Length: 319
Image (tube, rainbow, N blue to C red):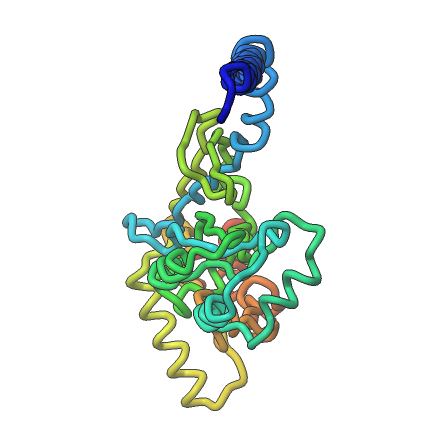
C-alpha cells in the first residue's frame, strides 16, 4: 500500500512542475509583450520607413504627345495609349512551364526566348519583353499572373492618312520621339513632359494603389499646319498615277496657294506608311520635294518678266 507520505511527496512534485510551467509561460508572455511594445512604440518610425522603402516607390507617368492637324482641324497624327510588357528578372522564379509557353505564344517569341532573357539579364530589374501590345494581348498576359512580369502604359503614334502624308509628317520612334519630317522638326513643340506619382506595390512588385501625384504630366502642344487633307489626297492619287503611267522611278508634287504662298499639299513617290515600322526603308522615306535639287526650267520665266517690268525695261504692252 502507498503511504500518506508518498502521496504527499507526489502531490508536492506535481505542484512544483505546474508552478514552473506557469512561471515559464508568464515570462514568455512578458517577453512577447515587451517585444511588441518595443516594435510598436520605440521602433515604429524605423519599421515604417523600412516598409515604405520596400513597398512605396515613385514611378514616371507618360505624357501625351500633341496632335498634328490640317488647316481644317482634321487629325493627321495622334497618340493612343497602349500597354507594354516588361519583366524584372530578379523576381522570376519557379514559373510553370505552361505559363512560360503561353507568354511566349502571346508575345510571338521563339520557344525558350523568355528563359534566355531572364538568364542574360539576371542582374537587372527591368527588361522589355514586348512593347505596344494590343489590349487583348495585354489582358491575356495579365491573366497568366507570372511573378515578375508587368504591364506599363505608353503611347503609340498613329497616322490616319498613312502613305498620303508619310513624307510630310515623318514618324516617331518606339519611345514616341520625332525621327523624320514634321515630327522631328517640331519635336520640342509636340513632346510633353513626363509626370511622376507615388504608388504602393505588393510583395510581387505589382502596383496595388496610387498614393499621391508628385508632378502632373504636361501634354505636348498641338500643331496645326497649312495642308488641306482633301488636296493632299488628290495630289497623292494623281502623282501616283502619273509615275505609273510614265514608268518613272520617282516623282514629287508641291501645291501652293498663289495668293498667300501657303503649302497646301506635298507628296512624293515612292511613299511609305509610317504606321508600318517594318516598311521604313531608307529610299522610301526620302523626301525628294524638300531635299532634291531641280533645274528651275520655265518656272523662272515669270520672275524674269516681273523683274523686267519692275525695272522699266519693258512695258505690259511689250510683254
